[in-house]
Image (tube, rainbow, N blue to C red; front, side, top):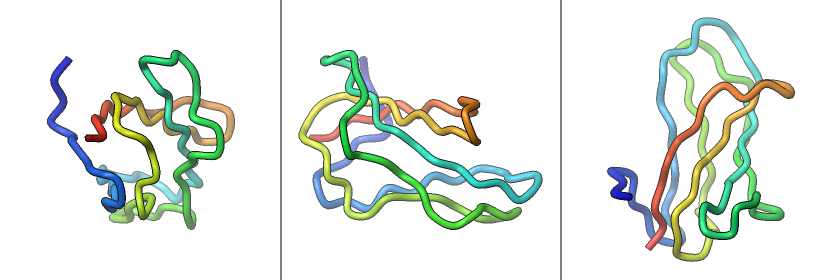
Length: 85
């Protein structure tokens, strides 16, 4: 699998998209090789408003391929594939 989203440890990860109304988002990193969520690795922040962004800094994942699963409450709303080198 090839990803346009390639990061190194310590990079700042920022997600951008159109937010239609204020929402609280939380993310969990899913390790594709291990087939499970990375314990203790989350993404979050203040509620998002139209034009807002969310991110995690610094990225603290070992090299590998991941999906960032973004949730609003218990509902999965977005999945972003990423590679950490």
